Amino acid sequence: MASKIEIHIIEKVKEKRKEKGLSQIALSQKLNLSDSFISHVESKNRRAKYNLNHLNEIAIVLDCSPKDFWPEKPL
Image (cartoon, rainbow, N blue to C red; front, side, top):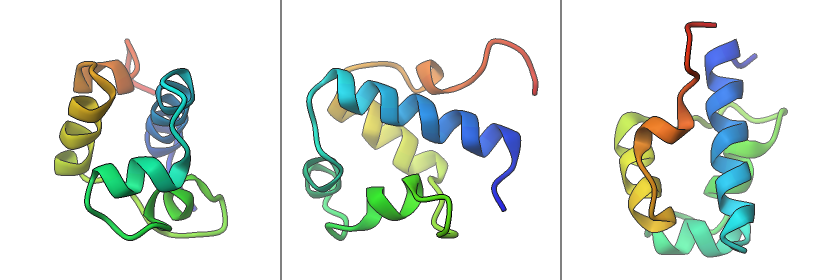
């Protein structure tokens, strides 16, 4: 099961992805990852997670700061 911080970050990435009009597959492809990677991370039933490198690359693609995915205060 994902931790509170992991769930928060996953939801923030999902929110930013949708704001930019990108599908899960499109974001996966822009990151040069398998087509299903983002869907696996966003799925509650999978154990896939973002690492720091993923978050940095996602921020580049979504034209934002990696800090945008983190909460203001510890969870």
